[in-house]
Image (cartoon, rainbow, N blue to C red; front, top):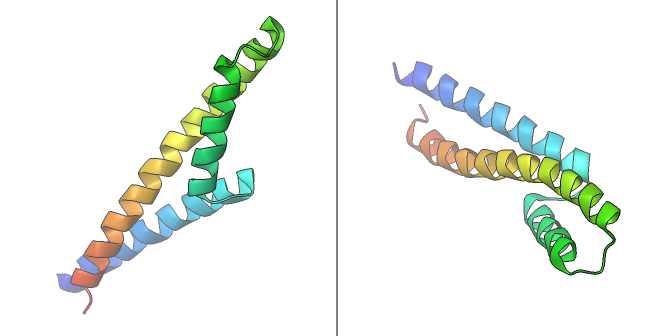
Length: 91
């Protein structure tokens, strides 16, 4: 049973690492850098320095990026949880 649980945890860890790596490649940065980047872009959106068209376009892009941010954040947090379980289930 312990071996089955260990294999399951390892599969979850591998899947999450692949998801995180895919997002890192997509944006060319780590999660913490992307979090800062997205915050800065959101500030630009509300700064009032953009035209209506620019604000609308940027708003659409940010919405898509926020979806990725949420996936990335949850994958990162789940990976940390699974890694904690991995150490507990080593055979």
